[in-house]
Structure formats: C-alpha cells, structure tokens
Length: 84
Image 1 (tube, rainbow, N blue to C red):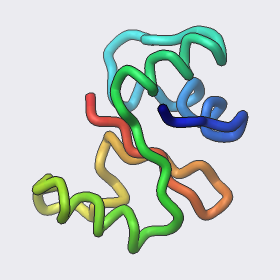
Image 2: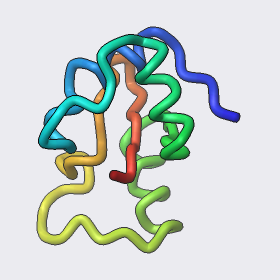
Image 3: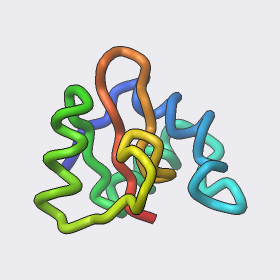
Image 4: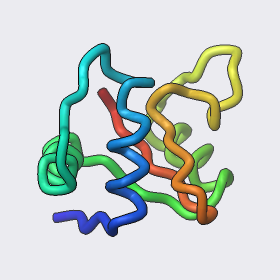
C-alpha cells in the first residue's frame, strides 16, 4: 500500500484535470483512494521519472517525459506519476 502525504494529494487534486476530462476526486480521502487504486507512484527527481518510464516501457512520444500528462510536479523535488 502506498502512502501519499498532503502535498502529493493536494497536487493531484489541483491538477487532475490535466489527465482526466472530469474530476475523479473532490477530497483528500477520495484522492488517496484513487491514487492507491491506480498504484500511482511518487519519485524523487526528474531522473527517477525517466527511470520509471524506461522500466515500465512507457513512451512519452516526442515531448519531455516531465511534460507527460501523467506526471505531476509536487513542487518539492518530487513527482507523482499516475497512469490513467
């Protein structure tokens, strides 16, 4: 089970529209449950985002992996990756 702190949950709630046409969560509890269901991961830094994409065989196309819609910048050096 993953644990998502307040900064991660707040980041997801504020930016979920980048990934989904409608909000999938309205509260911190709903956000946490959704992220757990998706097996979303939090990584430290851009290099770990790139490593994650490589390990999972994900291709961001021509854009920088950090600009992919499923990558959320938490703002403290960490990134949340949500596979929608």
